[in-house]
Image (tube, rainbow, N blue to C red):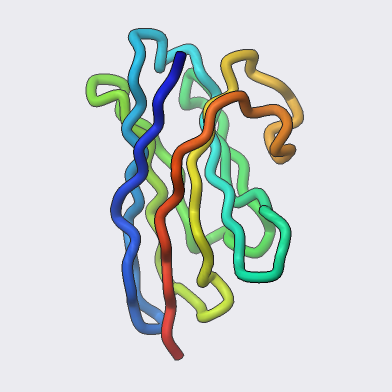
Length: 125
């Protein structure tokens, strides 16, 4: 069983930055592919970013590429999402997720077996 706990959300002005954290339980964190997804009110959950189990590969949605950076700290069993140059349209509940199989379909929600509870990010204009 894997438990994921996000933190770091909040209210920020457009152009500002936030860093989200996702703390994972379990001794095999280093073997999980990790992802971030977001869901805005009235919209479907969408892929934001993913990082391979080794950290060597990262993937981003076109809407955040160049502004967001995903990373992981194996010693802390924690995944991060650094978000810069935030736009009001980035407002959403952000959730981290763990894929224990390392699927090539890193952008698909059904590739991830475990999910955090989500953290709210609100960007004001």
